[in-house]
Image 1 (cartoon, helix red, strand yellow):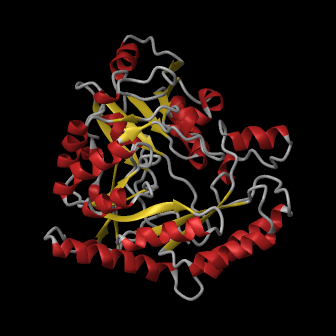
Image 2 (cartoon, one colour):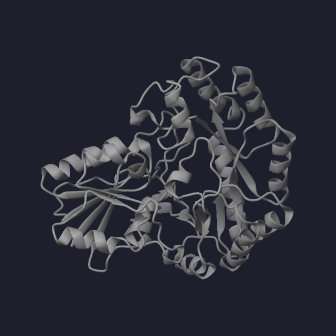
Length: 420
């Protein structure tokens, strides 16, 4: 059976630097497919989609809300040609009802241990409209190595430099942050993978650079330290979301190859200042993630925050606008308050203001968003700051004999990433 798995393209924000990371959801899902399924993967951001491909069954994996309209278009065309289509992925779960009007089936939840049922139903002509496993999550020890072999690896380079591979050591999140949908998608229970499964997957990844995509590594101190000890022998260099702010944890993280972290910077407190300093003291760079448009934000407070970011010497900063994605508290609150101005999902890219801010006009918040990017990178452009991060990791790789030289034959290619 030929199963075509598609990752829809989306329109990047104006001014973004283009480079793409290999998507994680499709390779995790592909690992759970029955053995008799011949899967062909297409990342439409980098590859041309051919509708005359003889696919028996089509899957569309959508991670981002900005992918949904394109995903629907693709599905409509395949179904017009008589090919059945199933949707899955984060954005499918957030937009399930709308997506179902463009689909033969939608899959909600985690795929491990579930795909035999789906494909048996397809072969029997009894495909269900909805496979809902959001509240019936599989045992986390079923999660094996992702099937990265479906990727065309040469596409995931930027100017000859291989992009990071994505990897996860846990699922779920005990936190429930205001703009985040993880509590709905993966549940509030922290579900770490067994360390032998973590090691098994790390051993299959031939890339020295990783992005650990766990929602937060700062959920259980003992587990976090065990994870870092497990990683040390692999000599990977990695970035991640927040690491716990304890000296013994940060020390182990550095030994395990921590390259840089994404750290939310939500105020101008000494706590944030000292936290960034402690990362730097352990040789870990910091990319600040800064959300603009919260209800306590005024024009003055946003300007002060930008000044503060420059003072604390962040290595990079990524600014986003509060975006009320479905199944978040932000969406529920702003909808009840009648402050959502647009339900055009193409605009839900974290760079366009689609709601009424409390203390300013939407247009003013949009201007401040642009000002934040311009002001932070005014003296040292983002490309140069990124170069310094790459140079740092190259020096570490050379020190432990894991450095892989640039691909000169691919050095002219430039692909997409959310940056400005």
